[in-house]
Length: 285
Length: 275
Image 1 (tube, one colour):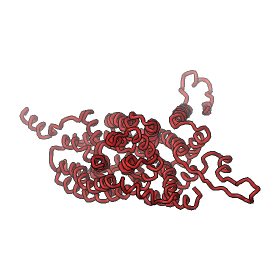
Image 2 (tube, rainbow over the protein chains, first blue to last red):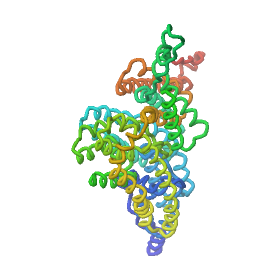
Image 3 (cartoon, each protein chain N blue to C red):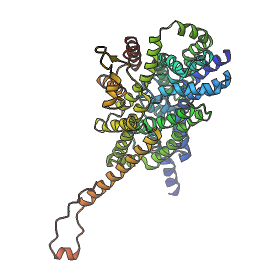
């Protein structure tokens, strides 16, 4: 009798899958961070990078060749997010793959669904905090130091990746610990919306600040109506209305151009240069 | 110039692989490359000043959906050595950086198109569980291919550019040079407009105007304005959370006690948010 039960147990035993540690999670995210965009393409953007990042995890979880192949193909789908604030996605997906390898009923669609569902909001969050706020702050600081010829200035730029790596490692671990249900709760409870609103507010505020600081446009135009009258200096009139009107108009104009249909950015930049050249020729700028 | 040209060409190739995400983002900046270039050409201070001036163009540069409106690396790696070699003012250096940075955008577009080939190769590798194939298609092949996109342009421009620049600048009329300077003052606007577009919250747009006129009227430095901005956002977040918590408390039914059952209960008081 006891021999029967022993063999019965042996048949249903799962192969010995090594456990995924939090160190594995951190290493995986960092691997993604380093290689996220080295193979970037219009067709699938960060798909290759994401797959490369999670590959050590997959190799650990799926010793059988067919399972590994399936997992790799599963992750080669289109993926694009902000690598730092998208780190929870890496953590959550790792925990889902781990559960799936342990036999839980987690479908391909569930995993891809989490990636697709989260990559948008996290990119919104990440772009606002990381690129619209932290980058301009750090780079502006570095640039003003550099303008004085201070050789420390270039190294200040490195604060950005430092910040990104610290935040990313933590967020990846958080995503892994919290797992899918917590992240979904977070999404539903509106906390993410709160975060994005806060980040968007800060981002827009900073864009205003930077626009006023770094865009310059003045017009030397002045009209003379008759020899006795004072010249009609356009820039003075504008300044009396409010400071920085012309640069403001430029930003708003470009914003509306982008909203109409987001065209080739290279062409827009080129057009901007052409307009500047023509304006200079005409004496308007 | 050969040493600088070699460095610039190789550096451009290296940083545009995008390896290390934020790391190469930082070290490809004009302000950063000014350091090695300045050291190599024997005028670190001036290199940094020029690098900082060109940097301004690209502070608001965000890869919105991984599309860059300008190439900060190309601009810095070509304009800084040329400006140092021909003794250009920072303003002129910015002027020549502008068209260079725009030209780089088209190189990027080419790269992202060709890489599609490697993604399809990866599909085949994945079907065979060939993990090394992912490394090849994600890094080795794209990087090898990119050498031909990145190195030659910068190498040749820096090696022969110095002689060309002087001749070209002398031949150019004043309005053209002024035009490039004006364009330099305008280009950051594209980056900022792009970020505003990407954030996409039209209901929050007034914040842009608050930030803009705060600086336009007071000339407060960026860091100072940022302090105000961060404090305001934290406060708003705090008030919103308090309001949400109070609203949640108001909607929970009052606890029934024996005393409450015995006496008629009042309707729960409406909690008004006091923000």
